[in-house]
Image 1 (cartoon, rainbow, N blue to C red):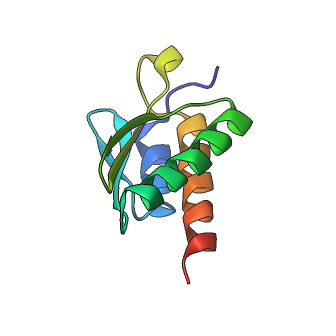
Image 2 (image 1 turned 90 degrees about the horizontal axis):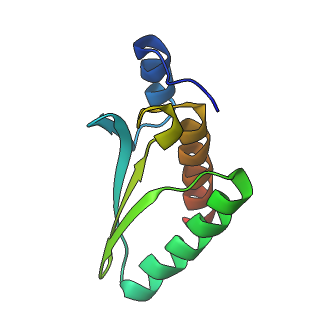
Amino acid sequence: MPDALTDSTLRDALATLPEWRHEDGALRRDLRFPDFLAAFSFLAAVAMLAERLGHHPEIRNVYRDVSLTLRTHDAGDRVTSLDVDLAAAIDRHLARRDP
């Protein structure tokens, strides 16, 4: 299991993930979709990415709003490279679907 990122490494990672924030020891991102179906389709894609990477986010979904929280439980609920990799994969997915 990867170690928690140092403050410096975490700052560097966040510079490459501008839509994510570090809050309460986790990476967090909030998204709003046009409707529930779009939000749920996105969540299905996130599920596939998470399975492929073997790392799973905490997800909150209310109608068209989605909140993602990434932290590694085996690293003391801190951010590791697994979280950064999943955040980057989610961002790449979102970039591909934008017009």
